[in-house]
Amino acid sequence: MTPFHLKIVTPDGLQFDGMVEELIVRTTTGDMGVQAGHINCVAALGMGRATLIINGEKRYAACIGGMLSVVDGEVTLVPTTFEWAEKIDAARAELAADRAKKVLAKRGAHINDIRIAEAKLKRALLRSSVANSKHKFK
Image 1 (cartoon, one colour):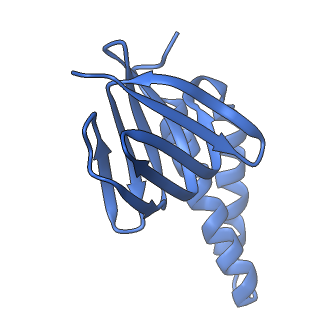
Image 2: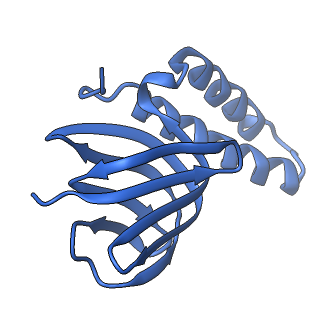
């Protein structure tokens, strides 16, 4: 595959700046793949696993919110949250999921507490899934 330039920038700073062969991210309308020569576009990001193919190797990350931009071959990913699989603390993600489940199991919980717990559970499950990916970048 032909490589293209990808830059990943979060509120915490630059996460990646280099050449990749493919990028797959979850948008608000479903998964989207980008390869060299992709048409110009902008897409809102959802919550999901990001897959990058770098020098033929897959690298995974949890990617939440933000936007993806492809302009004249330059690809920029600007997520709200981006965590490489190898940096995710799987035990911490499991604890967060357990805490959220306890809130959701409570009878009479306020609707705002339920919504927050649902969002935290989704994030924790994503982080756990990505952290346990079989193909982690070394």
